[in-house]
Image (cartoon, rainbow, N blue to C red; front, side, top):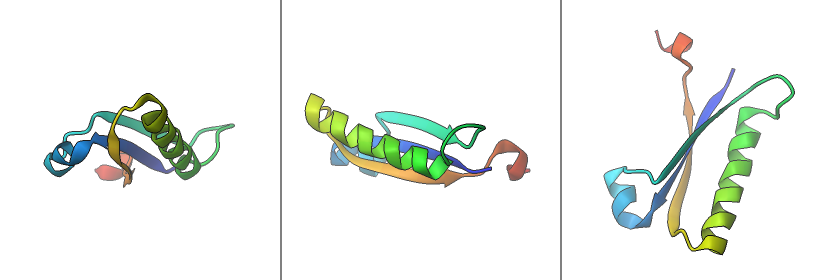
Length: 72
């Protein structure tokens, strides 16, 4: 089961300091699209929201994560 984290940074300063302004985790589930598709859709939504609302998110990253049961 895949898990992805979508992280948005405002400006170059927060990006280089790795201080996200927005963070959300998406995962596979019954009746949902794949986690990767959800993450890509969320990235597109955040980019549109940033442009329309002038939120200033300059970097929006998608990172694959291990589930807690797979980490140990």
